[in-house]
Length: 314
Image (cartoon, one colour):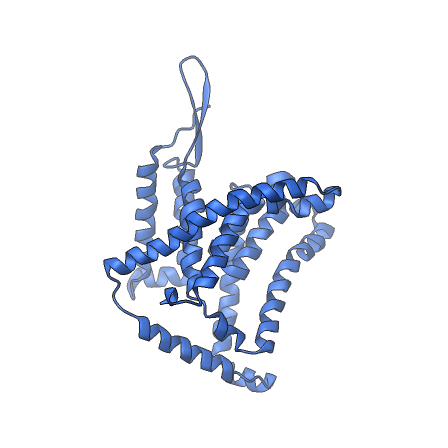
C-alpha cells in the first residue's frame, strides 16, 4: 500500500520543520493576547513535538514511506533528517550546553549539595524498574512489550530527560532503540510530569524562606553561586560577531568530528569485549558499550567538560 507523504524531499521537509519551530518561538514570545494565554496552558516544548507529529499524521511529511511501481514492486524510503540531527546537531548542542557548566563552582557547593544531586539522579534511575514492578502487579500488559516496544526502553528516555534534559532524552532514545512510533507517549508523560513538578516548584519559590527555615537549610553557598554565575554572564555578554559564531561552530562541530572518529574504534573494541561475556544477562546489560552512538555522545560530553575549564567557556 502506497503511503507517500506530500513532501519527500528532505530539504523541503527541513524547511517545513524550521518554519513550524519559528512559528512556535515567535508566538511564545508574545507578551500579551491570545498566545500568552495559550502558552500558559500548552507548553511551547509540547507544541515543538506536536506540530511535526500532526504533519506526519496528516501525511504532509513522514520519516519513512513506501511506493509501489507499475510492476507491483514495493520500495521503502527513509528520510535522512533524523540521522543528521541525531549524529550532528544533537552532539553539537550537548557540547555547547556542557561548555557553560562551571563544575568547580558546583563542587564548591559542598558535599551536601553533591549528595543531594547524586541522590536525585540515582532515584530517577531506580524509579523506572520500581514503577515497572508496581504496575506489573496491577496491569501486566501495560508494562509488557518486547524488543523496541519494551516499556523499559521508553522509561530510559524519561530518565535521560529528567537527569539531563531533552538532548539526553533523545540520546537515550537512540542508544536503547525504543520504538519511535511510541516515543510520543513518553514525550507526553515527560512534559506533563515536568509541568506538574514545575507548578509545585513555583509555588514553593514563594515560600522558599519559610521552607528553608523549617528545614534549617543553609543556602548561602547557592546564593553565592547564583551571584557568581550572574556576574560572569554579564561580563561575557555581547552581541555575537561572525567570528564568535564561527568559533562556536568550530568548537561544537570539531568536537563532534573527533567524537565520531573515536567512537568508531571504541565501539569496535567493546563489541568484541561484550561478545566475549559468557553470561547472557550480563552481556545484555553491557550491550550499549558496543554502540558507536553511545561513545560519540560520551566523547562529545567529556571534551566539552574539559573545555569548560578553559577560556573556550567564554
